[in-house]
Image 1 (spheres, rainbow, N blue to C red):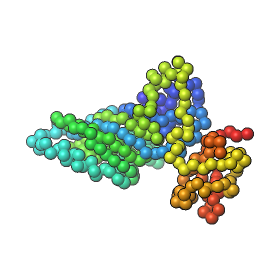
Image 2 (spheres, rainbow, N blue to C red):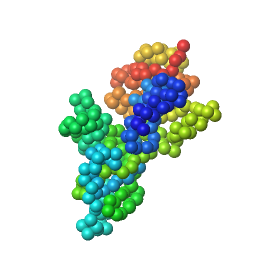
Image 3 (spheres, rainbow, N blue to C red):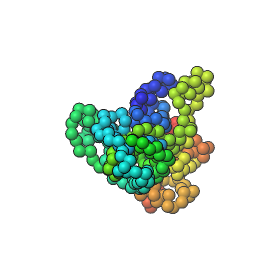
Image 4 (cartoon, rainbow, N blue to C red):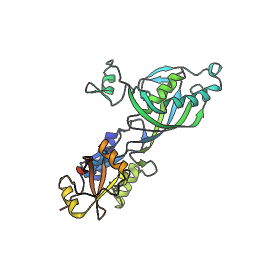
Length: 301
């Protein structure tokens, strides 16, 4: 099932046309897929970007897709005489090479576009193309377990930034060890501020819909990481009508937050005095801060 398939199924179940998802999940992977419906789809771009995964890397095998879904390119049993018991230690030690800001070549079968065309479309047509290297951020890699044998496997937990391919880490780890590697399984345990424990399955969703106790998550919940701006009632109304606000109080925000918001054009979470979530704003003008509506969510009269 692809991420697109998930959206289509939810669209049918909820009988809502406007459905979108954050962070595409590979068809071979399982785990968290944040989904927004209705007006909340406009908020997907503002969700936190960090993700976390739990995966299994199989050594001694390489494939066209860098996971087990692809065609096998090489399959050489790991020689105990050559690598001995030290392979586990070397593999664990090598994981540190993939932590931090690293240069990564995405898998040839991926959704990245080159000259306006998806890499997986080019790969399926057999067209040779140079996959561009890019920088990604890997916050942490934790070794979880090891299983020996002709094709050893190690389980890892990875926390990373957007655009990181775990398949590429599996492939590159195998290359560093000079025995090849591919991703055997992958579960996304966190995405856009949501965890696997908080998620529900399609079966649970259908049950809740049948019982009439299904409730959508408040759109504010994944946005709590954003600095909060509170507007008085009269000002809130003007802001919701698309007006730029120069007479709003930002005293509750520390100067560093304001400076970063102006310099990086970072989004802010805007609320009314009554606590209603109004939408996403942005501060402009360093001398006299102006709050600009970027996405108005509330519908105030």
